[in-house]
Length: 433
Image (cartoon, rainbow, N blue to C red; front, side, top):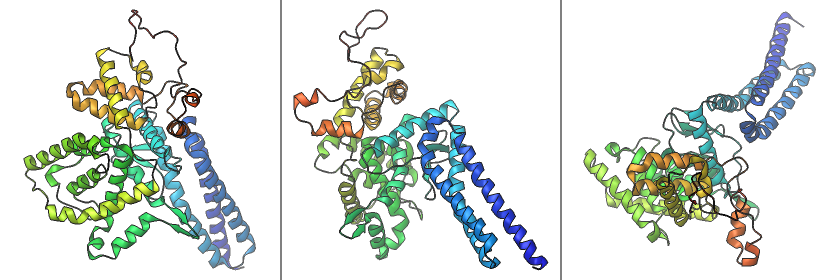
């Protein structure tokens, strides 16, 4: 063997040893994450790391037996590239877990996790990750990490998380049709490429789909968060290469609510549209061409059809529940209720998305109480130890059970034991729910 081959062998051996150390270091650092966060990710990522270690062991055995060093180098460099995505995700989670030790970002990310978990409880998918702070919201296609905007970390920003979740859920939508697997998102995107108009709007369609998904699963809270806090009325009719004009996004979001139950949403949608229209006029931007909007309605209906067909249980249908939550929040404020008691004052079967919508309704009715509404909503979004949110099976069981006798056997959606006497404050006045 000449000196060149020896040098090459040493370099390959060193490269393989370094990759082994890298995989071990990543596993060790993931194990150092707090147990509550680690249990969300470790089975998935631990399995992936184990599989990569097995691949590396096979590559090391091949190195010792294969005389074709050129192919060995190709295999080593290909293996290195394949690990980049894994290392990128693990680093984002390790960094995010560290930042989440800070009280503010940690509490907000915990609430964002609860919103994601709530939405996915009605969708046949598992996320197995957690949210991390960043300078802006985005979802990385190479990992499952959802970044949430720092420092905009109020409950009013939580519905935006649903938009980023869409970039994980929507491309994965599929159904088995005979021997074929249909992927509606891919089919719609491919069909859009074929049209002359679609070529220029291909990138933007992904964002429109995400907006409609977020409104579909989060209800009016997403519409209000976008119009009142996020969208820019100054440049409302201007689109970029990737992002559609924000006025087009408003049209897409409101299309979700224009169904058979539109009357129940009319007042909220009309309020949002009026606020958006006035903001555009006051900012000096021009109102959009209605004919151009009409041309896009066909595509919006196709997107909504896909959401209704593939996510039938995920649609937000809790406006009455949200109104009840809003009433309870306002009553709790007037009663000077403690934060610790707020979770137990919620109506039965309240979910995190109901809380977000109820908080927005309370804020619109009483703008001066927005800080108190947020304080109590934050407290309610963090259930006491031993308590939790209604599970999917519990919600479906309640929806499907008609017999009063069977209903008495259903578990309660609050973990606090049933009381035989009214709860009382320290000064003795009963708490009226």
